[in-house]
Image 1 (cartoon, rainbow, N blue to C red):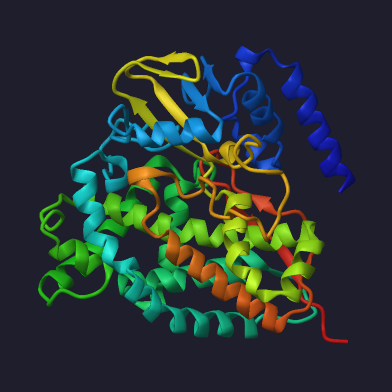
Image 2 (tube, rainbow, N blue to C red):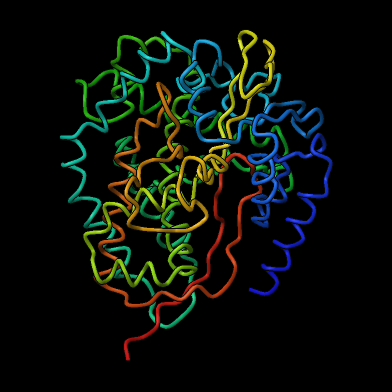
Length: 415
């Protein structure tokens, strides 16, 4: 912990000594070390709509305060999602994969509407017993008294099982979903060439095309592939657009829940008083789950591109410029959220956060994510008085996702 404190102090000193116009909050190494917080703190205080002229990703605007993020999300007519939703610009090659979240109305609306029934209230009620039985089995099979990786054994396993259900994907091959999700969001340049990544994604496309062909020839069913195959607005989509939507749904259905399951354990480890409060009153889970999602903020940012000049926070954003809404900063804005740095499981307005976005692009699966997290924590509380975190989490090198690659833990044997 002393090392963590020293690293944070060094980051704070750097954040406040760097000339304001030279601050680049997209530096991904800071997301690996979790030392980006002071840079956002300074921008919120001194320059909440901030222009960075030079970065790994080219010039971009940072929107760092809660209300300004909501304003950008609300003006979707000015701030376009078309083509890219992250600070990363799409490569200029044949692997362009359009998807509905990277589209504007009206195409966005009709494609989103096609898959929305998968997370209807009735469907969620039907999913709940299955999620509970799977969570119970995963937790009951964990080793006692010896170290293991919480990410692999719990967070990943529960989410890929749910993905397999949403897609009606062959259950015994479900870990392909995790592989393709990681391939889509992780820099693989140290282990794979660009051509190898291309080949693996095309293998993903071919696999799902086979499932698509099966669903087209069958009556409409209650799974995502069948919904896309039979939807009026999606049944004629090109292969790469189909692949883009599949990758979006894999990542969207995986990363929020997966990283919040891990992030919740870390939050409770750092705030044992909040865990004691929850154990004393398990009904607080209803407010605990959105607080975990706020505290974690699994999607660190979303990007838009200005269609027209726009005044925001006293700055003029020019048509064509890249605008990055930093959800991870908005969720720590003390002008919108009381005591935002603290993890508090009984907040009066626990869903007052931007982890799921806002407006027409708000996450379609947010209630499913919350339900999975609530169930897994209900089952954890039944079983384990203590889960010991043994080492620092290993974080993904990404300024888009706040993701964990490993968290070593141990469940002590009963006394």
